Length: 164
Image (cartoon, rainbow, N blue to C red; front, side, top):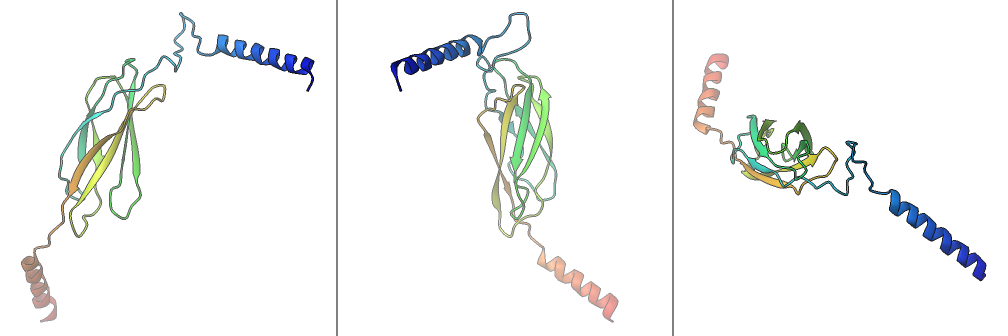
């Protein structure tokens, strides 16, 4: 390339960079438009709920967070309702920043042969789409025990009624 071509490319680059710097991130004082450069993500949610969950029983979680910009908050809860199922995701909102919300109808489908810890991931999302750090809520789904004596008595009763 010759010197003239290099000079033209340099001038064009400076021109486009100066235009980009003067237009990106500007907001008008009278508008409701918010630059995402000024927006901050919500704080990590605080989650409270039962620590032991019976399979097949619905439960709720109490969730609260604040947004530094006082934006509306949405909550996203991800969890795996059983060992054999895929992760499900629920979204709730919008809610005012700082208000505690009780959200729920969560459940675990079936108990495993042994107790297992299950975790639920909760994130807050502001109205501009910025997300918080995830809060991890741990629950235990206990093993369901079949009362073998009762089971044997039921089998004996069925045997007496239908077979004899």
